[in-house]
Amino acid sequence: MNKREFLKSAAALSSFALLPNATWAFQQGKRLRTAHIGVGNMGGEDLKAISSHPSVDVVALCDVDSINLAKAHKLHPGARVFFDYRVMLNEMGDEIDAVVVSTPDHTHAPASLMAMEMNKPVYCQKPLTHYVDESRKMMKMAEEKNLVTQMGIQVHSFYDYRLATLLIQSGIIGKVHTVRAWSPKSWGYNGEEPAGEDPVPAHLDWNLWLGTSKERPYKEGYYHPGNWRKLLDYGCGTLGDMGVHIFDTPYNALNLDVPLTIKNECREPNGFGYPENNTVTYEFPGTEYTTKTLKWVWYDGPGMPPEHEDLILPGSKASLSKKQAKEATMEEKMSLDAKAAGEGELPDQGAMFIGKKGRLLLPHFMQLPKKIVKGKYVDISKEIEEVSKANNLGQPVRNYQSEGPKHYHQFVDACLGKGKTTAPFSYSARLTETILLGVIAGRFPNRTLHWDAEAAKFAEEEANQYLGGDYRDF
Image (tube, rainbow, N blue to C red; front, side):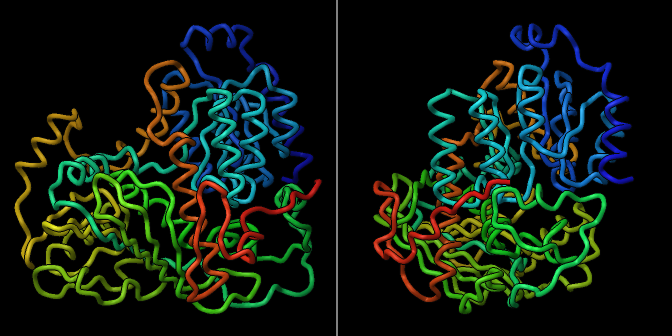
């Protein structure tokens, strides 16, 4: 089904579904009418989680791909459908209470800012923005308009990450001087921009996919649906994709702001794709939970992290085969990672806090943190029980289907006047800024960049051109 045919059939199905009293109901805190921008892949997961809240009515769906729209509309036949989020917001502004943005990174800010300008609460996927300038704009607008906001870092609301935050802040390993975090994923591409042009599929609106980014011809397999993460103009590489998840708990636990210096050890840039392997070292000013300064090292790409004394675990060597890692289900992968950590092998992804009184390993994801002192694991079950009870954390949940929606439902509840979000743009914009500074450092390999947070610029003038970008009219 092409775009024209799909819109015609969807309009007929959804014309009866708008509730005349929905505005009143929202004002009474009973129902929330949501519009979803981007409903394929992660957008589909976001739609599923938000709509699982019993007080949500999905009233609008938007995607540049009619295949994605058709799948989403089948689940929500009462919703109106759109290809262009600008048309959706202009036509349905009074019938939408909150907006969920789940597009490729380069469209996060343009779509979110338009919704926020219309006083709509926004749930936006991670990383919050493609550019540092955009993060600051979104944080400022959310504050000025006093909007409910939430960035899509779902693990922020998971038991294990909340527990690790509280354990670190309780002083379980003393003041922290170093954090090392890693992911073997590789959202990088070491090649030139493809030459030529392929026919745009009938189900895709290429101009709308490009959005505010510069115009370029469509090439099959390079951009849509997922490879944009590898490319400078659309994604943020592995650091932006996974780093924002794995950075989150240490960033929150240690009450960090933005770094003083950033250095990325990687290959020379090619002007089109991100490096495949990165070792990014940040220096942060100290906080009440750290030493005078904090060193943070991020590793990504195949074979990461490298061997380092900070990352040696107690026990014998254990490894996950590439075949196991590729074929395992999410629950099986969690079990394999737990087994590996117990036998001396690092989990596939995670973070290690190094403090004056020991180390704390936090696997990614849904595994309890583990304390290590002088090469041995230390039983912290008593501390875990005490912290959990004192902070009403409940019990560990090992089913993603149960744990996953919490972060989304927190946003819905906040929109309905019940509590607050824990990853609002006032927090997540600064986290994203930190991540993006490391992404920018990849354009200046093996060179230390100095960041002036108050002035919002680098001391190295040539790096400042990458803090923002021009928006194309489309």
